[in-house]
Image (cartoon, rainbow over all chains, first blue to last red):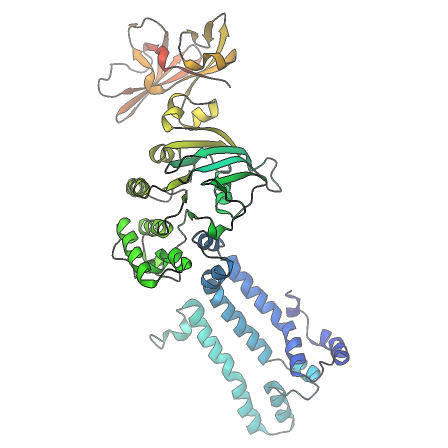
Length: 166
Length: 351
């Protein structure tokens, strides 16, 4: 489940592309989404594993004895407990997907345009100003996410302490 | 009336060489305060979890108020449990925690607020409604957990090691609170503990469980005076055990012949054990006794406040005697003394 971290995308994407073409996913938005799941999976799995390792299932049983059925227990007890972890996992997933080049390039077959692809094409067409501008846009979400994730997860971090009470 | 009847409960887990709960049957009358007592791993918490519905028994039945609990989902059983670490929901404040059970029932907000206020007053914490659990002390958390459990007037209240996490003076307070509330609301209560002192202080009756099997279900006094076997006697602090044999209606022990009278004489096998509590043995420097007296040497004396413990070696057996320190006799170590085991205070058990 965490093998994508050690496996470079090139190793599987060419073969997968052949299958995607035959299934009709090539060049489609959903095809690109699907293939992005591969590099994302380890980050989500590891984050949520850590969350559940610290999770105490007795809370759910306690809620059940107090009259909550399984659905209400999940919604009122389990979700609030794992929500911070899910947010972090979601943000990791976003960052990994945001920065994918090879997978989008190949599976998208030129029809799906994302920021990394744009950076490469403007860089190779020799327009440094445009390249620089796009690069800044590209980096911006990562910085913002890191900034707020550290505050959300730990509540108190060196990244935000300089700003007083946020 | 919430009578709880456990019949032939059996549960085993893979990887264990004996069943976790082995054919346990108990009859608990409504309104009683009962202890499941036993060393760690004896199966008492497993029985509790089967009553709440976390586990299903392999066989046997649990009947509350004349209908079986087993086919009913946990949230509909009317059985609440207070865990050892209280488990107050961290994302809700005290009011929301306590009112949780009523919110699950769909009761209106004003009614819930009113009842929450009542319960918090009952557990003597009237002003902390807006606080979050992590802002409360251990004792406060436990009271809130109790209030949360009792607000919906459950048929059965289960407590897992209620006094274990508390220091001595908090224990007394909590004990009183549990007993007062339990009697006031008249809710059948079962608590689980490994501490026999806790069980003796709180419970009307104690179910003693070793290795998944019920040893006996009796009042605390009976465990002290008439324990059912040696292991049970030891668990309650019994220390003097004499191997005995019945020979022609006379009782021979390792310290000499003994005379005693008790009701279960007919059930005892020929080789059995006699026991007597330390506080029932009498000591004197001179022999003032008419029967059941033995001479021995004092091997150690330990002063522990209200009592003084003398260890007296009679033949090859060390007898533990506890005498009230007031009226201390002038006995010192290595003195020769006479010990007297009053016939009516001796109890025999099969091994």
